Image 1 (tube, one colour):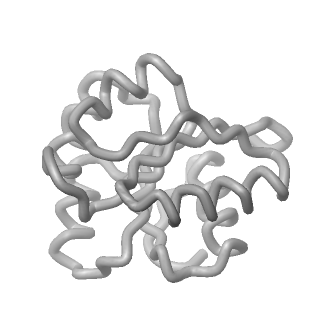
Image 2 (image 1 turned 90 degrees about the vertical axis):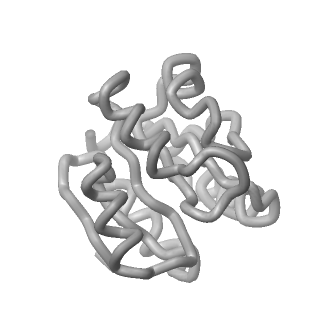
Length: 132
């Protein structure tokens, strides 16, 4: 996928995080920031509608359990890769997410270079846990 513009769908209820990451990725180029979603309720429908290459999925949001939504997404849209994008680094949550189909994990506290590297590496087919 190198050279290809990566379509990113962010699912996070914190607009400050979403806006900051959106601005950074737009400035870097090589990314298309899709319409963000603030909860996991309609994750599968949004993926079908927006057709991202990668979903950045927060684990701590009100409403539907994001890991349940991730599991459903895997059965409906198996080609979509999901990277957990969270401030929570508890091993049990990460393990549940991987079991549900996540391709990787990146901390919200990581620098933008780490996040960008994670997105590109997962897009290239690499499974990633932790800093790249």
